Image (cartoon, rainbow, N blue to C red):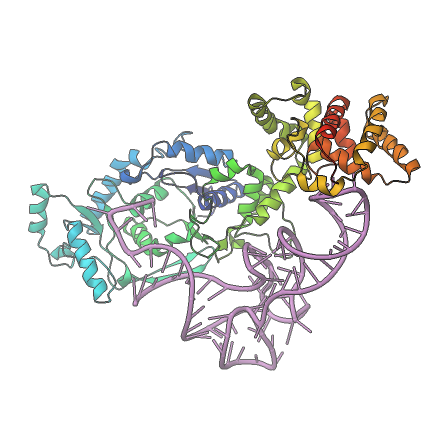
Length: 502
RNA sequence: GGCGUGUUCGUCUAGUGGCCCAGGACAUCGCCCUCUCAAGGCGAAGAUCACGGGUUCGAAUCCCGUACACGCUACCA
């Protein structure tokens, strides 16, 4: 194993969308491979035809790439170890299955599913472990079925599966990178089906063969696979192959500690993309869910490059972690705070264009969609939004006329004198030589001070009139960005409509 | 039922026999800053390290039990 190029894989089945748990598995595979200067491969496990979903494969790969997990080999990118779609490898599996059959490590089984189910029920009732009763295990392999019977059935064209013959009373042992040594007793292992009656291999069979043929050095997968390790290990032994190293990741959990599932929240990565989370935040967040640098390290924000540099399987935790959004939200803000304005503009502008196609605005379109204008909005708002799309929605007054005035705020900030003060101040704004934040601030203070009033008596009403809401960036900067025309228009309109509380 | 894995503040976690009557981050609360909202600064609260036994001068850390949780127990992956 020393000196071999590291190769890892993410091997989803195309049954739907990418699950956040799947993304984490893929991420850890990717990080480890890149850290070791190795390759990260995507293989599609489509051996269950009934669960196959149209378009799922493309979708999975698209989402992975969105997240920045670019595969070195995959069904769409190709590579030297293909095909990467298991349904294209059926002959391969058949060949290896024949070998097991010939060497006495596998046998035909003609039991019907009703028969098996009945058997299972019976065993459960008796408090036994449900296990195949080896009815079709041939006499020469230690069973009770004459070879001739089996051959007769085969010749008759009866449907069958092929099962592996698990040796009795051996113990199977391996060392998990994350969990250390784990031992199983073969007596508790079922004679696993290797080939289904439709001629497709089961996961267990196909993945072992492919993992070997594709020369993976490390199998990093979810903890749910731990119980099937002995079956896999036995297969490696049958073939005389050296098994790769294994790391079984802890599960991602619902708040009630059950395995993360739909129902208790969104689990598809796409759901989070749609909500507006960025790949940087999602990757960062998910990386930290079960892994940390350790040893008094207090870093929370990691770029993909840093993750690659720092990642190690040994530092992955053993216990499952609950998937809660608080920290993700915080991370998203961290990224927005530091993201270059140009990048934000790229994602915002289409959103704004779309809004503009749906709603009227009294502002000039060329102005409010310009880089210069958007950049100003971004700098004023970047510390106040939780998602990039909020630059457009949360502070929509930069693009559209406010359609209402926050009722509570009006009630709180308006006095019987407010409107009078506003109309007295209005001409000052009209004639300001420069409509800049500094000039507006100076003018407002100069207006208010001789009267013995505080700036707040005008600041708050002006904010509400200009934006419709009681919260937002510095008033002076906001007015400057909005521009004199819009500001005056909004003030006049508000004064007409807002009646003074008696 | 059987097999397997796990268990440190609400959450993510640090901790590998003395530095820990347990550290950080998120969330929460308070104060400061302040034109609001954020951001930022400071601070508070929050974990008898699941429980019970050992081992040891000394245990969150090692051992054994128990409990609980989760996973698997398909011709699904």
